[in-house]
Length: 284
Image (cartoon, rainbow, N blue to C red; front, top):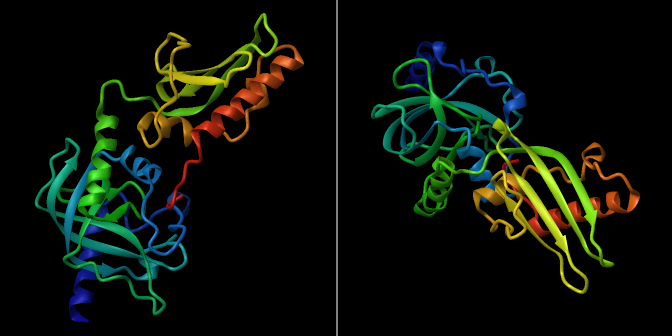
């Protein structure tokens, strides 16, 4: 009990200047996993890795649960921990970090209101540098995963794609979509242009030919390429589109003039959405 009180006091002293300041807005909190023991999906890992400046493998050395008055906006059933950990390795990031790090994390509590015992466990942290040496700030209140070889093996290709010079930009919506009828019955071509962060070019083309299955592809350059192909599932290109396109085509994005072309554009948008498949998340 004395040890816990002293560690809580240390948290109050050390974390007074931390960006989290022992308080995380409720709006920033991701939902709990969808089922007992549900592991992170590709989209979960990409959601965490994309905004993180640092991805750290660490071993927990000490933990202390903050009192409720020092941890506002924690979701029901969760508690906020102050953690002291040893850096095992820097999986990704350029900022220098020391052997010892400190941070805050929200964890689920058991039925007695107790947090899990994390001491000596290895974890993966998705973070930014904090305000003081040795302090880091998680990019979300629960941006800590239990480390395993399989988790790191799944994570590294995502980090490599994110760091690539030609990494696909973040898609934010549909700017325009236009369907044009061909000379033959059942022939059409639909082009949709997507909005992205930084205005990087992204376009999707759907081509229909009589008595043939429709084909589509995505181009990440200024050139609209009919030879483009759909992205493979569980890749960064797939994630950018499948996880951020709206479920329904925005009416204002459909710039076709006649009703038949507008209908075809909406049908082709739905076809692309179905082809991409669902973007499953366990963290939400």
